[in-house]
Amino acid sequence: MRSGNIEQFKHLSQFRDIRDFNNNIEAFLAEHKKDFTKSELICFKALLRYCAKIAGVSNVSINKLLQSISERFGEVSESTFHRMKRKAIKLGILTVYTTHRKNGSQSSNVWVFNRFLNSQTIDTPISDVKQEKVAKNQENIVEQLTPHKTNNLLETNNHINKRNENVQKENLDGSYTSKRVPAEFRDFVKYFFNDAKTIEEFWKVIQIQTYYYTYMSVDDKVSLAIDAMKQLIRNVKFGRKVRNVFGYYYAIVEAILDREYENTLHEMYEEYAS
Image: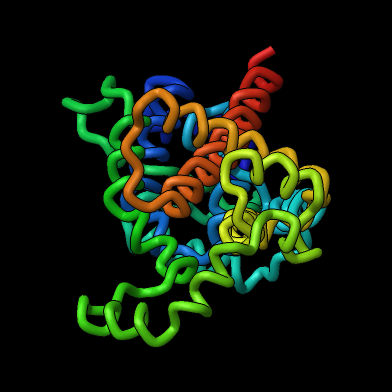
């Protein structure tokens, strides 16, 4: 394939518009996000940002892509990008075309995203679908955050043998929270969950979710954490039944970060379209 301007590859797009493209990608990630590491997801989403002018098609160079990732998220290796590429191709969401200049030398690849939704579902909003999948999987997602339940006999024995220890732990209010937790977040959460261990677990969710977002300052993380907590409290107050509060909080934080990415994608599309 001969290299050229991005408009030259418009016929490769499989999507009606940017909204159709976003719906397909969101549905794909709801199903396959677990197949990528955090760093690979950053590469995947960075590539998506360059597919706004022609929905689902880009000819951005790998060097430019990695530079943009470095400026926003911190350095990611080229090998990580290629691992993401191989996974995306294997999962059927991405096709890569090599291009050549007139002199025969190789130029930038053309990245073409494939449809994930069939024609019967292209108009279906997928945010609810994604939320349902998150709800079903949230206990598995945050398994590392909460201890496994033991059988009733063991629970009874522990209750008898460690009664005093348990009482002492339950009496540790928010003022005993670890110094690793920002004071602003601690002071906000303790009005609703005045327990040191609980506050620390909520902050652990933020640390896990933002681990690869190296551009985020502590203030950014605190703002994210409080916004997510407000949403959790609001939903519970309005009658939302939550079986695992840490899993639900994890899902809320993840949704906020995903919306931030989608807003960035739309802004880039508007910039290219203007």
